[in-house]
Amino acid sequence: MPKISIILPVYNGEKHLRESLDSVLGQSYGDFELIVWDDGSRDRSREIIGGYRDPRIAVYENTHNLGLFPTLNSAIRKAEGPFIRLWAQDDIMKPYCLEREITYFEPRTDCALAYSAYDEIDDDGRVFRKRAEITDVFVVAPDVASEIMFYYGDITGNIANITIRRSVLEEAGLFREDMLVSGDFEFLVRLAASYSFCEIHQPLIYLRSHAGQFSHKQGVYNLHMRENEELHAQLAARMKHLDPHYVKAYDIWNRQVLYVHYAVRRALIGDFQNAALAYRNIRTLGQPSLAFLAWLFSANAHLKFCKPRHSRALAAHFARAMPKFTAASKRPYSEQFVCPSMSGG
Picture 1 (cartoon, rainbow, N blue to C red):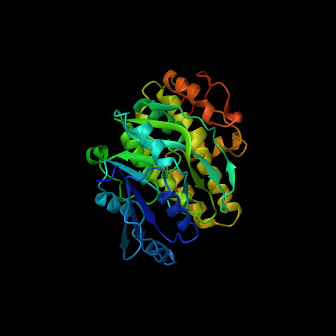
Picture 2 (cartoon, one colour):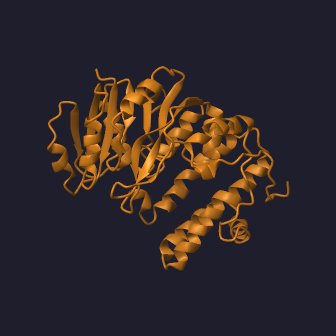
Picture 3 (cartoon, one colour):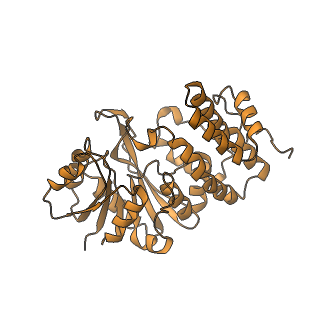
């Protein structure tokens, strides 16, 4: 039985797939299986995958495109290792990635999953954002992980830097297949209700950003709005240390302002279909007029009136986590901010 099962869903990934596969097979740590699952690709992805003869690779196919999360779940069900390592067709593992991840994560038995920092590369493989090469590892408690996601979204930043214990998947369940874009965020929000996370500060992968990615496609942001709503509500309910009036105001002055900004921008470029969908999503939140007013006061989403009120635990976590961020982020966090009230409270 391999120690790590690497899960690689593939869909029309011919451009960077070979480089991604080579980076996995070239790891200094070799006790793994690589489960590659093609999700109905229409390009040369299957031909590229079929060109490998490494016995650690197991290849499966969907006859037609089912989507990311059903494909991930199918591959996870085939996995044999006690550690499940998610991977992506565009990205590159550094040669010591798996070795460092298992060294840092395996002894921290109180953590459900681990995620690492990453360097970012463009479509041609050039690094345009680099993290500090430090080896700090921290345990992020459930309340801190939930608070980070309440204020800043996905705590891991990406699905390609995540390793999960199989035992946790058996207890908590797999990815929700009814979600098209937010299944990974929902999974993290669900785990953060009960489990701690292991945060590895060393950048262990190159994460690629390019215009052809699904997350950059037109209309995907509307899907995020709709699917994330229940997740934001769950996170807000966990913020017991915050005044409910503040939680409501923060939501309008931050998340909903961004939604309005997106709707206006789509309308200005003539994409009225997505602008109308965005407006309908904003209306479901209950206070569209206030959201548009907040957008105007925020100078088209460029000014932040409602700042995060970090708990002492989160402030302490960020204080020790600062070295992994850029110098521009090294500013002290304050717990005292004024937030305009939207409810008269």
